[in-house]
Length: 237
Image 1 (cartoon, rainbow, N blue to C red):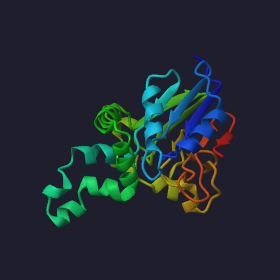
Image 2 (cartoon, rainbow, N blue to C red):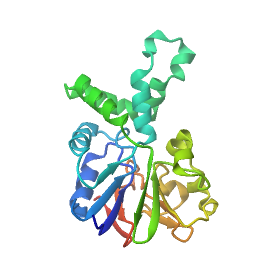
Image 3 (cartoon, helix red, strand yellow):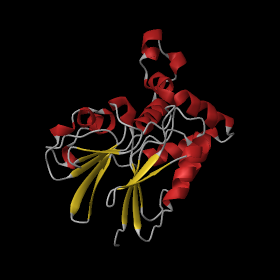
Image 4 (tube, one colour):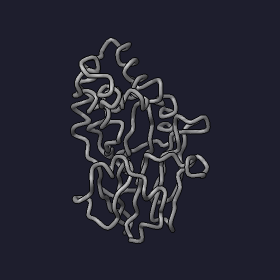
């Protein structure tokens, strides 16, 4: 397959309307495009269910690659955690379930229950999350690209990366100069606004690092997609 556009989508966080407007603008074509999603599909936003339906319907779509984010990990861990009412107060406060609820999961939990499909939808989502890779490497137009949700150690091969760093780290977002290699590293997780940038994808350190989280749930935020080959940016209304 000859890739004409190497597309990457940043954090969505349950913002279904914003994602719809973005996806319409991108005009994804599986015959010429490769689209990588960097994770954090749910939580914080109030329309997780239609987003879940869209993603589950497209999990086998040609040209789409979905990666796991820390919010997918929290959803999974919360699902398998001991119910909060069976824990002591301090255990409950630090439990995986409470951690998810306190980080935007409460609205996701409520909306899934309201759907009337809670058990089946949760089961399908968990099964999907458990199949999601944490990172991937792609080559296009003579360059190598690494994709992961949050962070990595540029000095290690992808197979040696620490899971917590891939899902939770912020070292490269805060210090782009730490990466001096030729590989282009593409990240979500850290809203660019929090780093002092405008709400659009950022190419940093002479293009070695690309930040794609444009704070979809922030007052000035949006869901963003970029073609890494042309640096064309697409954003939600």
